[in-house]
Length: 93
Ligand SMILES: [Zn+2]
Image (cartoon, rainbow, N blue to C red; front, side, top):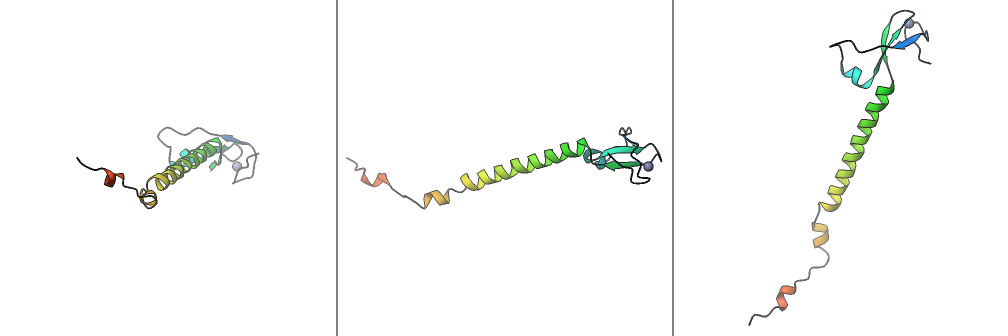
């Protein structure tokens, strides 16, 4: 149960974002309002997990892309191995 940080009452309801009043906190956190003391506060809600999942997913994709870049994006490692030139054996005429 969610508790009010002011009066520790559990009579807390999630409140809607006021028009034009949304801030960065509304993106990550959910708004709550205590019905006992009418205090409005931010807390971790469903939105927080969704934002967290988005961030984690973005980091995962970015790390995979970086890994693939470091794996395939360095042709020097491949070139060092076998260097065979078949062009030397071609005779003209
Ligand atoms: Zn309260």
